[in-house]
Image 1 (cartoon, rainbow, N blue to C red):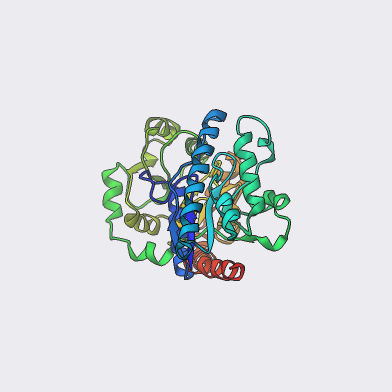
Image 2 (tube, one colour):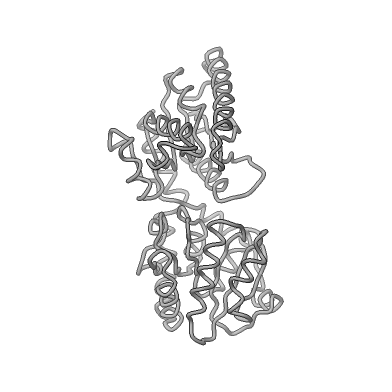
Length: 375
């Protein structure tokens, strides 16, 4: 059964990799596994990060033109028309100017995944996008939210509770692990100036400004509070803020090894080698790396922020600490550094939890059940 697929924030065929593009592609996989036939309907990017009403108006006009063309095309050839429309990642900075119009004209259901709603944007520079996103969400037959926080914020827009469905963030865990290639991690650590025989903390994140940089700074401030110990931090990632990251972690000196960017197929080797995954997660929607780490049996210390509690179970698969609390973050790391048996228990629980609750097949089954019923 054909479904139109659209991602106004970043199309799955966008050339620049990101977590957003990755989740869009995973949703595409899940829909296929559920038995649907997703068809990329548009690559129009509606994202406005600056708050430019003129830009939003221009994008809205392009969206209307695309919607009119699709309506005309599918009215002329109804056999080619989709049975429903699926939009991924819809919010005030990236509204869907196409899907709701097409769905109203063709009388087909509109489905949304990872929508968010922030009433504080009801007026101001993003008002045009806010109004469009809110209207689109309210018109959706089903709204799949990927965090409990998003669900609570969306509830005022969704008149019938059954239309709001929790879809936990997910990975193609089998594909991720099967694609893994062997890496001599110890040799790579030594080449990066690290040491062997240490307890290894791991962080995997791009080095860019904004939330990622703030997390690196919080991580550095937290690690400064650790007293002694035979630990080192392994950092996998690269970016234009490399110098600032090194500055933020400079007080740890030789206890930090920069391993550079690594392709996805090498990551399981690093997750599997490390003893503890550490990341404050400032501003993270939920964090795909947390799922990857846990799938490889690695326990987590993270900030208790936004959607992180939806992917890391506090006290079971890791430890969550209050947002921005560097002392608590350091204490959690210190406790687990001193307790290898607890790390082992949490790592095993993490693997079981992710396999059961956050796998591609689980997501596909949920999408099949709800979309199938709606259609």
